[in-house]
Amino acid sequence: MKKRMLSTLCSMAILCTIAIASTTEVRAAESGEKIVDGSTLTMEDSSTGYSSSSVARGEYLMTGECTISKAGLTRVYAYASTTANREVDYIATLVYVERYYEDEDFWGQVDWWVEETHDDYFLSTAKSVKVDRGYYYRVRANHLAGDQYPYDETASFTDGIYLP
Image (tube, rainbow, N blue to C red; front, top):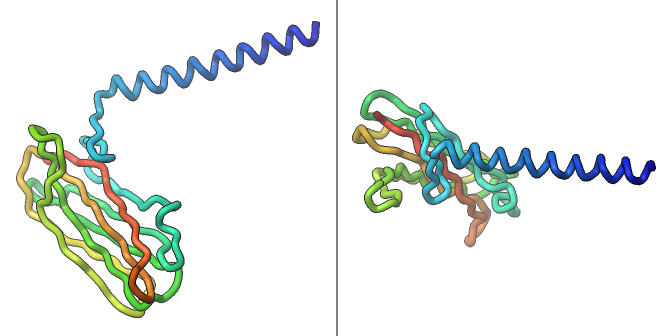
């Protein structure tokens, strides 16, 4: 009797888990959010992306992050930072502001810049970029740190935000 009751309870628990997982997937599909090259197209005012911890943690590089936010009707504010796990000879952040081209389904470059320094463990950079209305925009950044070439390198990117 105990075995039968235990078996029934386990079966019900498995069934509930499957039902909950299926419902979650359906809700995500019904929301209609489109994902392009890893970035979800959203109607949010800002988005922040982080480097993957498994890729970022090398001998020198600790983390990388980037942010995009609305800064008016025709501007976005782009920010990126790179953190090393100790002071390094070279640290750099390459920042790309990209626009989503719906007809061709890809991200195209709008602006980019590089910020670099020596003998430091942290670097951040930011810029206000003039853009056209009616498109999705994201920030993508490459993060480098090290004492000698080849440097530890990782990347981060945000979701796409819409400028109406």
